[in-house]
Length: 263
Ligand code: SAH
Image (cartoon, helix red, strand yellow):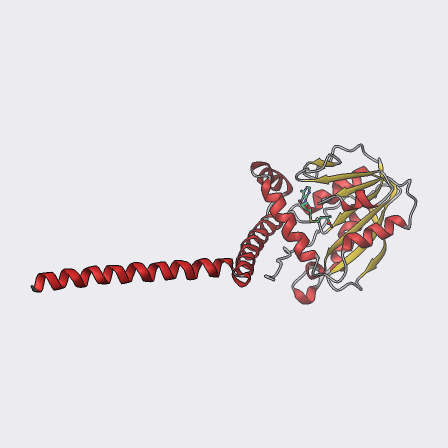
């Protein structure tokens, strides 16, 4: 008797568990179909890819150009993750530095030959009439040359304008500028846009005057600088006509990584 009752109890408990599971399943199903949960999923996905972007970004700021080239060669899909995150960050900036550079080029002769060092999605080449050589670590576009930009393969004294738009990322950034100096014609332009915090001593960044001094010692003359933008600074230099006779070691300031905040 006792045995029969307990077996009935067990059966009814099992039935009610099954019903409750079914209810939970239905509840879950309707939840997963509701718009609030799909936006939650979107948010989670964005958070994950945002974290991945910040990881790749930090890697690029803490290795040499050569190491960065190997990093992306091993998994070129990381480049797309990086650029999706980069564009998401840029969309929050009131002004885009690449747009400033495009406007500068549009205000000068289209016959100037340009080298875009660390071109990203090659927006410069797509927006101006000039002949543009676009370099980046990965090429997803037939017009982009994949290389470490310390070694572009361009002929010496062959271009009129060298651009670095937020691309002085490697620990060996002076090598990128040395390559620009090599490929520029005498009196050629060097345009550098960098994240403001990297060149603002108030936020732990380098002293911009030390940076300008080092670039000048490499063989450039400063023409102007623009600190009016909230997020970035712009420097305009010209390559000196004649190489400087002084051959002393250049004191390059350390440029700290730009760590993007979680959005
Ligand atoms: N100039 C573009 C992209 C900036 S993001 C723009 O303003 O929109 C910085 C770019 O520099 C990235 O695409 C990164 O891959 C590239 N880069 C960093 N180090 C490099 C190196 N050593 N050689 C070539 N490209 C490099």
